[in-house]
Every structure is written in C-alpha cells, then in structure tokens.
Image (tube, rainbow, N blue to C red; front, top):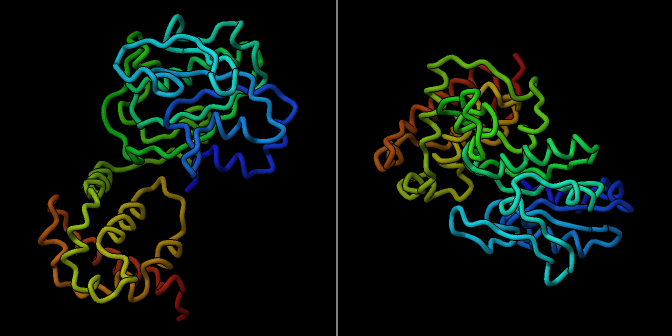
Amino acid sequence: MQPGITVLLASPRLDALRGRRLALLGHPASVTAEGRHSLDALMATPGLDLASAFGPQHGMRGDKQDNMVETQDYRDPVHGIPVFSLYGQVRRPTTAMLETFDVLLVDLQDIGTRIYTYVTTLAYMLEACAQVGKTVWVLDRPNPAGRPIEGTLLEAGWESFVGAAPLIMRHGLTFHLQGEPDLDAIEATMEPDLAEDIYELDRCIECGCCIAACGTAQMREDFVGAIGLNKIARFRLDPRDRREEADYYRVIGDDEGVFGCMSLLGCQDVCPKGLSLQTQIAYLRRAMARAGLFGGVRRQA
C-alpha cells in the first residue's frame, strides 16, 4: 500500500498538472513512502508549479502542537511560497487565497473519526473550490482506525468545526470515499450478529503473543500464523470486501496457512484478548471445503 502522494508522483497523470498553478493542503504527516514531506517532494518535481500551500489545525509543519492554538499565514522559508492557515484568522479559504492556484492537492492523514478537524477543513475547502470552479485532487491515505463503524450520527442543527456533517463517530472511510463516494462499492447491509462477529475479530491488537506460543510458527518461517488467519477470517466475513474467495485461499490454502496449524491451542491460551483463534481456523477450513478450494485452486469433481 502506498500513500496517494507517492502514487501520484510515479503516475502518468502527473502530466495533467504541468502548466497549472498548484496548491497543497497538508500537514506534518503529509509524507511520501520514503518519508519526504509532500511539499518538498512536489517542489522538487520538474515541471510542477507549486504556487501556494494551506495548513489545517497544528499547521503545515506541525509548529503549533498545543490544542486550540491558532497558526498564522507565513511564507515558507525554504521555497518562498505563501502558506495560508485554515486554523487562524479564518477556517475557510478567502477569495484571495483561492486565486493563488488552479488545482488543489489534498494530502491529509485522518484518523477515521468525525471530531478530528481535518475532515472539516477538507469539507470547507471542497465547498469553497466548488463555488469558484477550482479543481481538487484528494491524495488518499489509509484510515488507521480501520473499516469498522460505531457510534452515533451527528444530529442536524449541531454542526460545528468538530462535526461538520451527519457523519457517524467512527466512520470507517478514507477522505476519498467521503468526498467522492461510490455507493455501490462501499454500501452493504449487515445483520447485527455478523457485525458483532466482525467486531470481535477486530479486537486483535497484533501483539504477537500467539506467534510466540505457536509450535508451527517455531518450525516453519512461512507459516501465516494466528494473526494473519484471524485477519483473513475477519475480511472474509465483511460484506464490504469485494475480493474473491480464491484471493484469500491462495494465501492460506496450503501448509503455510490453515492446514499447517497443528491445533495445539497455544495461541488461544496466551491471547490477552481471549479471542477464539482456533474457532477462526476451523471456520476457514470449513469454508475452503465448501468452496472446493485448496491452495487457491478449485478442485474438479
């Protein structure tokens, strides 16, 4: 998995940005896969004209880490471009700010919750850019809180900077899916019992205790292990996951997967969350048998 900025810089689509004035909405976590800040990476890319930048709460470079401390506009000391604060004199970009660019690149790392102000800043920027016909490219990043959703929806009339829209508290989405939702791809019905099963599997904290206690893992370095098998079981249950069964079984269908487990229960005995790991392994074995799959290959009758 690569962050959107890394994908963009290696993509032929970069040519569409050449000859246009660009702006970056970013913050300290706006970095490439190599750890280079997106502002610096864009400035170093031949043919790109990064004309301005915007910083949300805490600033472009993280210079204001204390909560509720506003930042001011300034000129980047290295690159000389204006950096406008969207958490200072204003929360929404002014007309003068919008006139500095043709295309806005958004590279913000969210944490998957409604009350984080970056999603509000994105919403305000999208509204402002739509009003004046500016183009916005969202350079997506993973949601570290994962895909589960929980909490309550914000009620109409209670909107604020820590809740700009009727989002659920833990929304399970990325910025791209919030800004341009493909409902066919992300909407799915789920029975309460199934949701509870998925939530139970999500309790795994990947501490590694199960691997340390696993006899098979000590003998086979290629064994997927209880952590990997638990994740496979979790995503296979999730109706929002669009992968084919064979995609899962290709990973876990041989001796390095579910059939390598000797069922000694060591993993289950030491799990600090008390997860029934052997139950998930048995579930995957039954699912493979019903599908007639082994090692990702469907057996012919």
